[in-house]
Length: 280
Ligand code: PAF
Image (cartoon, rainbow, N blue to C red; front, side, top):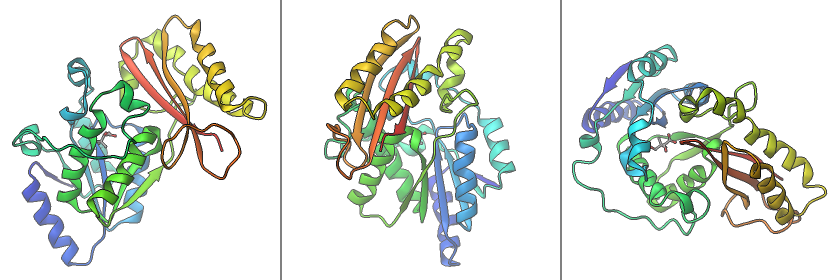
């Protein structure tokens, strides 16, 4: 495995590979790798000649300085994992390498960035597309892999690829869960012991809610989910929305041939967790 720190080194290596007709798979990450990332890497490894994984904690997508500061960083063990998973290239740029000057670009994401996460994390998705667009321009992958846990991010990245008119296939990968159902996330390790014990309630609630859609309307289900968190001393529900899986508009009824996804965000102490489930 080769580790590159600069865009130029990475781009020239990839140019040579492309000239040999090799396909490039790309997994962008912010590190603190877990089994969720490993599942993306395994899939990307099996579908491409060359595999690039980036590790970069992107400052422009954090709306709270303390969140950026506390975000887990584990470069050494991450690189060991990437090596063991037969990654060809790890890209670990510095902040100055990715942002030699302030990135003032704003992207018109057609409102996809104004609902759910966008309402609670101002500027978050603009920051995500700033970095992903820079990474895509450098790596120019054939396929890029994103987890469905960040469902809204996945839809926004699909929109970004259209906006940039880039020929990149966005591969959506299933959520990987802990044995008790908690969706894997780098943030899980920031939970206290007590918070970690309560966290699976998010998944359990989504699962029961999905079963209840035979008797409750989407609006009634939203009320039911809200009630489940009312008496939880450790948890604050930020939102539960059932949305159309292509434009993220709220679903009003179960009829109609559109994909429906139940999306949830919960605050557990200082940690914010998101999850989602298909409600088709
Ligand atoms: O999902 C993430 O880890 C990040 O948002 C991403 C896509 C690597 C951009 O920083």
